Length: 363
Image (tube, rainbow, N blue to C red; front, top):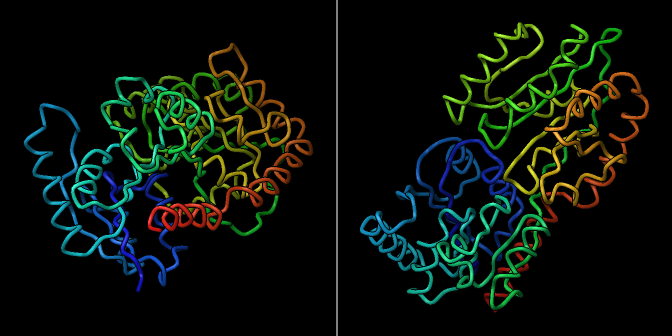
């Protein structure tokens, strides 16, 4: 009989954690593990869970703090009732935001509990490690080695920390984009939020955009922070870039958009490795990324793209100029990027690693 695993997820919108969870559920061996999901609200994730025939329910995950203690105590009780009613054998918190209530409910039920850590080094201060009780989980899964090392250094039992990179689905092989002479299209993909740095990308790419009206920047993503997104749009208008900078909002046809682009540009001040970087590599597109800790574990500078300091004068603009001038070299880097991604970043590899952890704990 399949053992039941409860997955907890706070946010239900389209994002990296949600995509990784869905890919994992698609690959899950249902003869060994039967998934259940609890999530804070309905949305993109729950729609896709219905298609996968995975049972889900809404639970009010909120901010974990002393001020919210009464609400969180009630949440732990609800989780505990769910665990007992459905005979759950293991709990997997897919984001650290939902880790503490999952921990206390699982501990009361005397079953193993796992927490996924997906953000960046900024969230690994001693205070936050205590707040989210990382030392008490049976396993903490980090999506980058640099995150695992930083976390393990502060835990009494560093063996609890395991690196499992988020896997991405394999798109069909994409042809080299063929646009009119001189035209160059770069895409940025991610929710419009401060730590994703869309404003910083625009400022750093401005000399490149202004140098040739045939240069285009497509910034795909919903307005997760409306005030910040409004500021991004104002910047585009003030600089007269309305024709060159396209802001189409949320899109699900990411493979098609990557197929139209010559490269991906990605910035993050928080995440170790945004999953869209690996998606672009699988699509055989070179990547231009910020030097976020952990990024160099995936992006080999000069081999699959370029790691640039977005704060350095003209650094991003110069990389983009090279992309447009030396097309053959950058296309070769895209081919190499696909080879590396195929070998290391598949959804199957991710899911098999996670299922191995479940099996180990449940033995």
